[in-house]
Image 1: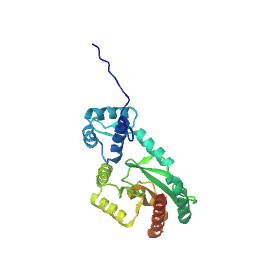
Image 2: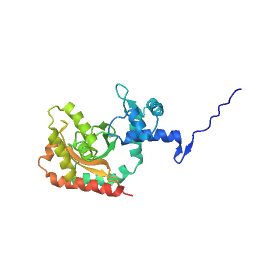
Image 3: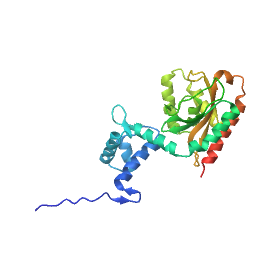
Image 4: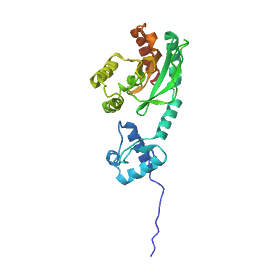
Length: 259
């Protein structure tokens, strides 16, 4: 006697279908994590079988939403996920909300002002208003930068979880073996306390920058605002005056982003 196998559509849930919910939960697990994730850890945190998690990861890998690290035992978000994040930022009101504030800050300081946002575990320039002066700093919109170097990055890093801070420090030590880690951590703490940070020719670009973070309604850091110019102009200008303007601009953006 033959038996007929009956297959139905995926079981529906309040959010859609069970299979879609699982894929979304796996992606969100990466978004919440400060480090690479493996199959076993994802399976435990989501109460799923390893086989299900493995199949989901293979599907996400095929679409470049996640990618395996060398060795294949752990995964991180992939370039397609970064593209989604960039598109999400472009569709939010952050850029349009910040634009008049950045423009006014540029007019007040006569230096280039920038808006940076946190994308995954990196930073990206989302907008800038160029200085009217002949010698000025200009940034490129779009490329990603690490969070460990530069005022715009450290202003964000100072407000991120400790595990991510330690990861960035370990990456910076590779580039700068003589890094004084205690001093670096102290600078991050000082950044949190005073509300801004400064870089002077930090990446050997001849640039100086003062940056302050802005936040969402829940207090999560979203990005940073900076004033940047050639380092020779900053030697004769009071950092405190510029810093107050930058911190004020960042706080204004924070307030305007609240619902």
